[in-house]
Image (cartoon, rainbow, N blue to C red; front, side, top):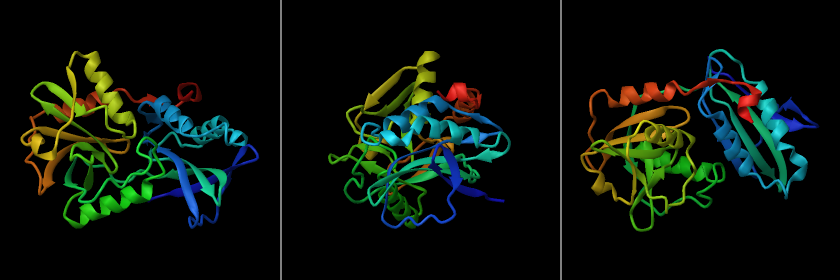
Length: 266
């Protein structure tokens, strides 16, 4: 059974938010992560990404660190959860919100489609402000038979997915989009790249068009699904899969998950 509970941060405590009217609400920052039986991947990176996105000089009253700790403490240590924290601006007034959500179904693979219009992002370095625009891009891809939309730069180079980051393999070399492109710092992608470096896998950053990914093994990465293999790119390049590689890397990433504790979250 799916469960969703919404709380607001008020007077130093999480309080149930019974009525959540999202009209005239701007999500200035957000973060989410997968928790399975009390374990999570790189929770410290999620914490840093969320807190760094909050202008605490402009909103000193928020006490975002205590809010984060309270949210972490509220997550059950059994079953699978996909909690989300948000800084909302409601008619300009800031509100910290915590959503405790059951984890949706997770999958091993997905299909891509190129987003046909201009880059829909307005705040490409921050997770949250572009949620609605990226959701519309993903919906457009789904209408074309895909699961995820790929955002291209103004020059037609691959930047990221609407709800995922992208990595690919050229032989034994792990590749990622050029660091020149503005995009959200993906915790999952960073974890995979750090792991690759630690075990001696060469990592290369490059600017590529979709056509230049023809024949490669392509991965989409997110906090919910971890690493997924791309099995098709609608009206795009053909993709490949080396037997056993995805399973090995998903297992490696899973071994990096740690039990939640407040000390780990800081």
